[in-house]
Image 1 (tube, rainbow, N blue to C red):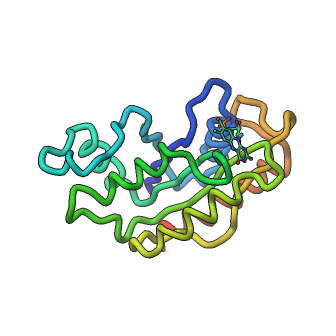
Image 2 (cartoon, protein in one colour; image 1 turned 180 degrees about the horizontal axis):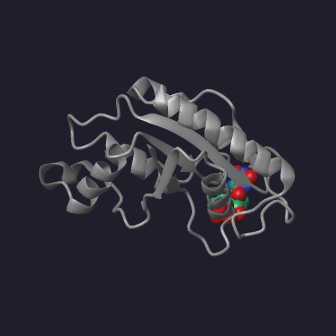
Length: 177
Ligand SMILES: Cc1cc2nc3c(=O)[nH]c(=O)nc-3n(C[C@H](O)[C@H](O)[C@H](O)COP(=O)(O)O)c2cc1C
């Protein structure tokens, strides 16, 4: 089994990214096992925590590294990725001496905007590779969500379902490579 953890940039009621995550889980190849990793209870990191790093942050880091790869499913906030995602990624690089090097990462997201999270995704691609994070280059999954895209039961329209299936096959291969 290829173990993939996924984190959500939104847990808002009716979140379209939660719906996208459901579709990604449903469309994953049989050899991939997807597990939700919650980041929404994590405190906001500051360097004063380094001396006595919160247990909840250590537990979260252990959870991430117990998987073969990490998948982000996140909306876009003001042309960027949400702060909760940055906090979760920053925590992987702390306390001082910790590193996210070698983490295999996929980036996906949905938004009602015309470009469907592409700006937020581009910013993630800018700062993560210099940290040694291995970000999958293609395919890109940035979903322009309309009211007809997701059904909320793990299904989506035909195009989104196909794209999700292709994405998850490619990401599973990337994680296995
Ligand atoms: C603070 C904030 C900023 C937003 N900025 C953008 C944006 O730049 N581009 C975009 O497409 N949508 C933007 N939106 C709309 C979100 O994409 C929309 O609320 C979407 O449903 C969020 O995903 P979720 O349903 O998974 O929470 C923004 C929403 C919020 C709350």
